[in-house]
Length: 185
Image (cartoon, rainbow, N blue to C red):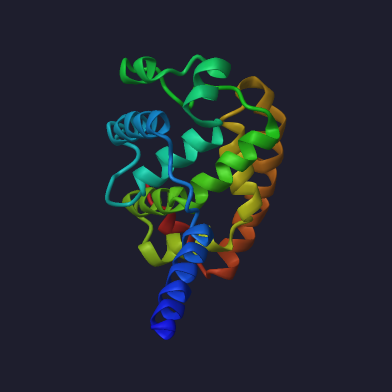
């Protein structure tokens, strides 16, 4: 009997550790309602194909990155009702630190896959797009995305990111042995 309890306790402990490692905090019901509304809004955006981007992950990242439903309402006026009525969640102006954190989360949800898919539909092969994006300065890509969440205050970060991305893109073109004609159009 003791061995069975020890085994059960060990299994429960392992599950608890796994849940913690995988971000086991579940969203509150208010947060989940806002996450669902944001996901619906993102799904209606033709620029984020559901088969490429992890829309649920992006919605969760946006809501958690903005501090949850309560903070979204009090700090940004983004209530569930406003989001359902069409107020864009990405029309907020974040500090650079919060914007970079949010962009990091969005990148982990496949926003770069959307970028690669867009390059592929513009005439570049999927392999070339994958190599190009993979070889580019990832911090510069993140900072470029982050600047989009900063309004006018993001201009300096966007300029810095753009400069770094241009340099890394040239290096990536050489590293990936890309034909400039593969950039389509």
